[in-house]
Length: 296
Image 1 (cartoon, helix red, strand yellow):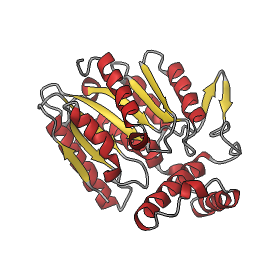
Image 2: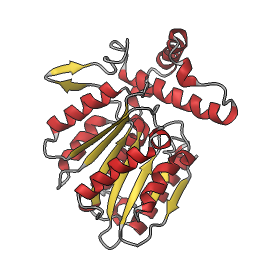
Image 3: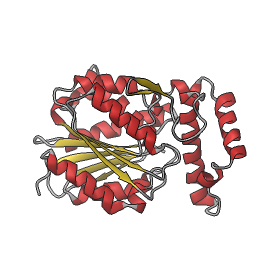
């Protein structure tokens, strides 16, 4: 689905929050984040990235550009809130096209470096390989037997689980795919499906997040971009060790960027704003106040 939802803030020009949902989710599941930003006075654009068909994906992108154009007036700043790798992959694609400004409709937007104020990583990223104290870390190595797995297949497994969970919530609430994923036999079937069914698909889809491209774009911004990592100790898909390794990697490749972190305790993947909303809201508010986007 290509739905884009827009909430108007209390004042024009205060700022805009772009909330990008996770793979297999629905825009309904971004209600917690969207209502929070609106309560601060932001205009809010929320969506779950449409991955296809191509015509629907293009229609959604055009609508996002239109809404950004209308919201980013009178010096309003932009806060991006990206959920999981699909949300972040969507932002990387937007940021790449916006930075290039090579064609319409991107030329009609204000300068990205001038309006981008902050980025929130919500249960992200699943970074393929990061350096930790000079050593290469395999994805998920601290969380289980995945050291030999292909990063693209592992990303696809995470998205498959998210899709299954979304379907079960709507049609079979008694089935819990995240619990089933702890069973070695079920996990083996999922990985076999990823390997045999999508050998070329998973590693090549930019929707999963091209972090080499993101890091290049990040370092070209005129001002170091503040960012907050919201993650959970209970996340079985993107374990906390993986997020923390990427936080350390970020401090190395972009040492001037302000980094904020909040490790929640009870939330499964992409359920932070359901299980620990106050903690998340306080963390985002603290960052935005610290960098001067909002006033106390």
